Structures are given as C-alpha cells and as structure tokens.
Length: 136
Length: 400
Image 1: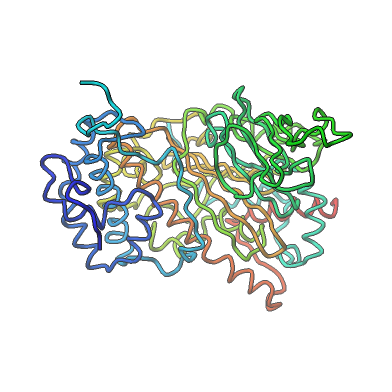
Image 2: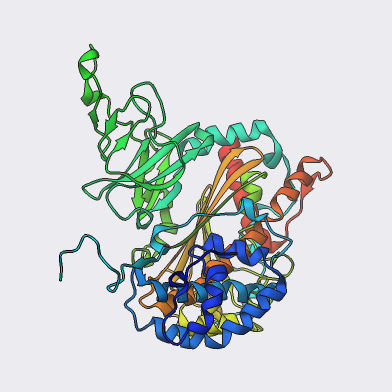
C-alpha cells in the first residue's frame, strides 16, 4: 500500500500505536479524505472510528500545545491528519451508515478546491540536518 | 427576549403578498431557450453578480479566474501590489488570447500571456512587449487590460456585464444591504470551496435552496432532526429576499456533532449548544428562539447565507437554458487553535454533503420539466420565495 519509510510515519511521543494508520489514513487534503472515506468498506471505516475515536480528546490536547498557524512539525501534522480523517469517517459511520450516500451528485462532479488557507504544511524540523547551514 | 417559534411556523406568508398571486406557475421560464435569451439580455446584462470575497485573494498577486459562459468571457479578479482588488477581461490586448487559461485561484507577480509574452502589471497596465520596436503604431498606454465592471461591498466582489451599470452595487442591494451591513463578514476567512456543473436551469437550481419543504425527504440522511421543514419571516427587499431557517426543537445530535460543538462553532455545532453561539449583528432580525441561519438571495443568482460564526455563499452561473455552474464558498471565524480547526471540519463536511443532496434532484427535475408532462408548477405557501423569484424574473423579462 505504501512505501513510507520509518521516518515518514513518525508520530509524536505517546501516539506511536497509530503508526500503522499513517500511510493509509493520514491524508493532507479534504478531497483525498473524502475519496478515501467513500472508497473504503464500512467495516474498515468502523474499525478506524473505534480505534481513533476514544483518543480524539488526547489528540486535540496534544495539538493545542503547538501554536496554530500554516505549519506543524511533521509528527504533529500526521496526527492532525489522522484526526481530520476521523471526522470524515465519523460522518460515514454515524450519519450515513455507509461509506457514501447514494442520493447525491456523483463525487467526481462535486468538486473540492483545495484552499491555500486550509493547507497545513510540515514545519522544517529543528533536528533535521541542514546541508547549507554554517551554523555550528 | 426571544420570540417563540410556533406561531411563525403556522403562519401563511402569501396572505401578506397578494401581488405575487397564488396560482400555478408557467413552466416556460425554466425550459425555453428563447426565454433564456431574454433573461440574458434583460436581467444578466446589467445585474450585480457575486464573484468572490476579498478574503479569497488576500495577498498581492492573488487572483481568481471566472469563466462566464453567459457573457462568453473570462473574468480575471486580481489583488494588486497596492492591495486593491480589480477585475479585468482575461484577454490579452494583443490578439485576444486568454492571459490565464486555468479557472480558479492562483498567484502571480505579474500577468503574462503565453502566446507572445506580453506582460501586464497587476493593476492591468501593459508593461512588457517583446520586440516592441517592431510595432509601428502600438501605444502601450492604450493597451492595458480591459476592465470588467466590479464593485465591492463588505468585501464581496460583485461583477456586472454592463460597462455602465444603471445602479451602484450598494443602490442595487438596497434594503437587503441595510439588513446585512452590520454583519462582521470581514472577521471571517475562507474555510471551503465546492463547485459543480449541473444540467438544470439556473432558477430550478436556485429554487432548491430557498425552501425548507424538502428537508424531511432530501435531508433525511444528513440532517434528519436538525432543521424544521419550514422557513419563517420571509422578507422581500425589492428583487432580493431573505428568510430564516429555525433549528428543530427535536434535534438529536450525533456524537460527531457533540464533539464538534465542544471544539468550535458552526451550523450543527451551534444547534447542539446554542449558548455558545454569540449573537451576530445582521442575523436573525426577528430574534427567534431557535435560530439556525438566514438565507439572503441577491437577485438574480447570488446567495449570502449568514449564521453565528460562519457564513456561506452560493453563485449560480447560467451556462445555457438547462445548464448551470454552481459554486459554494464557506467562511468562518478563524480558528485560533488546532482543536477549533478540527471542530470546523464538521462544518466543511456537513455543508458539502448536505448541499450535494440538494443538488441531487436538479437534473431529474429539469428532465421532468422538459418532458412536457407538466403544464404548470403548483406551489405551497412555504415555497413563496420561488414565487417571488418567478415574479421578479417575469417583471424583468416582460416588463410587467
């Protein structure tokens, strides 16, 4: 499914047990989250819902320790995306009872434009090696 | 003290508006190509149409491209280096190529035509022409981008196909503008943007969004208990109109809605915990107890719906008699924390999914109207906004 490396899946301390979710479920855009929800089985959605739901309060508490803005450190960004995906999944599990509602405009015709203001990027890690840096 | 809702729900609003009549409506305006052509000439050629909000293009060089099939043109709305927003025909003044070919948002330090490399400043002035000395009569001062009529009210960018609009935007908005003048639009920021092209007349499309009679059927899945199936306090402002949608006293929130209400404000979040929603000026003018949001329709085809802590707009762009481009933009008080941002996720999902339900009937309705099986439309008192829209369109088209 994914060729993510160990580092690509890193989550903040205390959330390592969600590591296996990152490659498949942590999506950066509303469009990708809707597509994943609609094309997943309801059983897979329920399993995700039951796994992540009980920890949403802990996740939001952790994220609120970081200043709100256009960037988050990569591990926190993955955690945010897991929580955002939870909201999308909860809609399917609690409201629709299915991955998708049939009496709607087809998804490919109901277009989502990704807004720059809603795009959260990974902040440069202070620990990452900087090839161009002369700072000791 | 808030007003109780029950007497409002029982009221028949048509009694206050005998001028709108009570009989069935003709189908012709929804299916006739000739009628559509009259609408284009007599309504849309001098109407203020919502194109975006200034907050959609906050930085110098930010632009939005609007392809407007009805006017056979493409409009470029761009924020200049001086932070002013301007609108131009998206047409190079050399040989007519589009400057920017892709619709939607973008950012550019200058406007560059790919055909021969003519370059325009963000304020529309022609700056660069390759091999300028080969042109014998080119006056760069005279070859800036051609402005498109545009005016701004409360940050909303409206365009008008007329080069000399008969009214200023604010005159055109009239008392609907008065009613919304105090709403803090400028304090909110874009949250989401959705769009679809539907094979349906623009009025068929609009009509699905100005009645709540359909709530128990169309929204049986997304909002089975959130809204009442009636609108209250229909307010007619010349050609424009406004109405209020109440929350149902029987609302049974799902865990997702409860979670989101603990994190942020929003349509269903406020319904879970009305005490959290600060009263926003410019909303709920009749101070009903179970307020959800106000529908505000700017004639002919723009909506600015306002709630407490959020608003959303609809643009209906006629393409042909039976084809319409629909754009929904959602705005909200900016999140200050990550948990608030997560709580707003429900606002994005709820509107996206609920409006998709609204859109789902449009094409089958259009097909039914075009089949010839229906001689007229019969409307309930709760569909009086549709009657008002029909009446105003007839006035413009036939001058009656």
